[in-house]
Length: 414
Image (cartoon, rainbow, N blue to C red; front, side, top):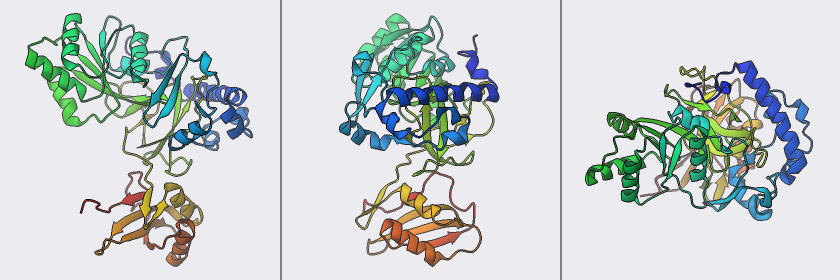
């Protein structure tokens, strides 16, 4: 196949569901048998009952925000790995520090970025300059394996030493680049400054940072294609862009859910919420319902490129909107608790502002159906958050679809 990495990318929705939920059952059963953390958290879960998305949504979340403390309590990996440290391939330490394992894969693409870089145009015979870091963090290895999975050759440049990298790219005739979105400009500008020919470079696969439209247009004007991917050091590849450039296609080895921040409850298609990912093909590190803390939304339909997996809109901010108000922390989970106590509330949002005396003012905006007493909601807010707040009742559909449940509008610069 030339257009697609493998046949999975063009499966029917029913075939994909059958495959992925079959893999989910096996992954959960394996995690319960081999990983101490999941033996405990999934003790009451019957893997055979996990037949669809609604069943998956009943499983507990593993929050990225809790991973640091969990690893401190049960080093090195909080009991979430099924393989002992001595049986792993590589060990990493990401900022935090959060520890990440890397296992052995029969296809040598453990992090599953192969489909992402194939969609970016990497093919056998390409020479890919890999400008992700190879030191302590897994990104460099992720994209080296991905390039090899596509049959490409890798120039392991890493980060920095721009002048030497430019010369190496020219000498080897590098055709591809993997790295952050902004670094190709530094390479191209340095090449222009030195009079070095980088005309062989044609395609960029970028991630781990924002790809601004003006930045992509600049690369396009230079004759380069530039497609982005989305992943984490914990999960590997989650989604990737194709040449259609209409959202990011979810990777075949994961199930992606979008949930209301502070909860594990999936939101309707199109609504912004937190990205939750379940790994299906990484038994060494069987993360199940991993809450990334990132915001996105599911797009309707399928990509015009022919890949049929669900798509997400892309990275839209962070879901961890915890704020400190009058010395007290208010968290998204507390907003969810307020909504749960009032069936009439469809959606709520805490807005934090400052009055003229620079004192904190908290307003809880509630989309409501039917009759409801604002004073009763205020009592619930005080009970849950230990703070007094104004309550504003608004019509359904009034609150912005941006995933925010806590909107801190205070100006801390003046």
